[in-house]
Image 1: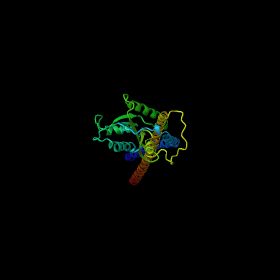
Image 2: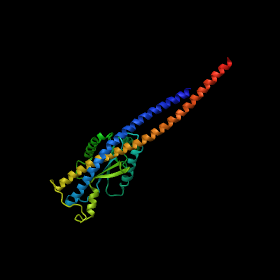
Image 3: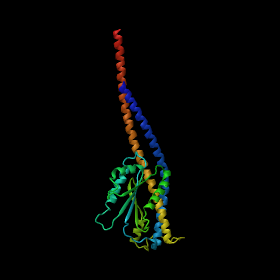
Image 4: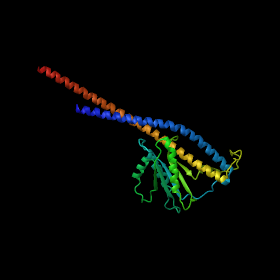
Length: 306
């Protein structure tokens, strides 16, 4: 009888855990609905910025940045998760960093590249703390930890934290030193980890426009854009809008992918708990039947002795 009571107590705990996980899954579902509307609006803005930048770079080639040497300093944003229950979400981010940026550090190269990492998310920080051996190891990049976005409303605040951190990493003695900025994140639409270059801005557009004749008849610009600013100043303003919007989109896409991964992870967990609960119920019922049979046998035995 004591063993059956232990089984019932264990089954009750599993049911409580299952109820908590179901609530977490419901919250994640609610968050994905908010993020879906935000992603749709951001995609429209991204298309508009890309079209504007394409027209501007074709109409004002003098504003295009000249081809510079490879930046001596690289900053990589790692967009991890603030909460858990999302599988190998953070592990894939770290593996991508190791795969793509470890290959760029060539010890035989004459030019040295400083790589610094900005890691977002408490769970990513926990992972990196365990995999990065020591700060004195020259093979490991310098890592700066920031709190990530837990819900949609916190994304704007996280963008501000990133901007402040980037400002502190900018060399004070030489503000013209070229810097390359990359972001590694989970893309919700493509269902995989992507690496996106944010600085220098519009790198793909600049490369494509450098390869082709800007006065080619296939150009999509029919009229020169009318500007109220100097083309250089306009390019700087457009760059600021480009980086700010892309940071918003990257964080939104990552948070969407995180919640989708959490939903799948919790569904698998609740399915497993349901299976274990059903097994415990069968065992408990079998033990209860044995107890009833024993009680009947005792009653019959007592009656035969009367």
